[in-house]
Length: 402
Image (tube, rainbow, N blue to C red):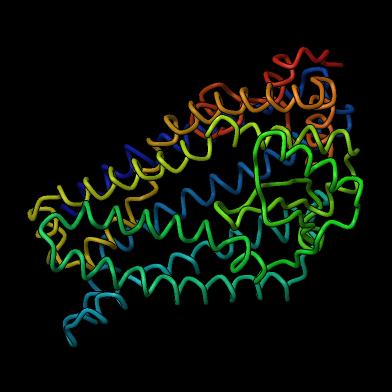
């Protein structure tokens, strides 16, 4: 059964994912030979090389990730189960799953380091120091251990005591996700960044007028010190309910005009206007329902074949290991509706400013973020939540220069 599960994972996730990455890699190599669009010839080639560097790392990580999966299926799960063998109890069940979570974070750390401290630095994005990188990791791990222990304890209890545990686990995790989204702007994000109220009174007045026009109420407009880690441009609306806030990267204020910024925020407000945020929450709920339903449908023979008992810890560890495969095949569904929502948000944002203002702001983002404008259609289907910029610009009637 061990090798059957490994083969299933290889065929259904590893090979398709590698195929998509290689397909995208070759597509970018080919289109780098075309005339530059949106970017200067120099920036066009640099954006292509940056995309290729990230794909090489992704392919390398996929291969090591498969080796990690094989190791845990053959040996790791049994080793962690020794904890429960010597000392039974709900606390030990939590400790077992938490052990796998910690190992997974440690496994991804070298790849994260190479992306942020090597590739991103090479292309002028990352401003991080090793000290800041390690501090972020420690803070993230601390949150994982504290919050993860509480969530896992709840899941272990539900699995142990309830017959329809898979349904209640989905509800419990969904409620936890909602709580995290609610707390993120005011409790979690400030652990990693500093947020200061927007000082530009004229810009603040424009943004507040924009929000008022669509009935969006926030707890404030804040500037985040994103530049201490990264030079890319961004803005977002965080949280929900009374905790909603507008967050502008300090890098965005330096590089985008007020008109362009209003257009970008208008796009984000378009998501609010069209209830895209609510739809996103519903999609998360459907995803959680599906994965816990699948988990609850696993036969006893599967665990026996793996040499494991069907304990709450083993159920949850198998879920963590199989999550990349489940998410991979769920991505096209999410991406399809997300890309549709982006077009609607673009149209709404353009109506609040102008098509030209939004298009120029989007082009500015591409220039500063070194986003390569071409992607393979199949790769877009699986990995893009936003339509390719060239398609968005066509929808905005923007004349694409070469």
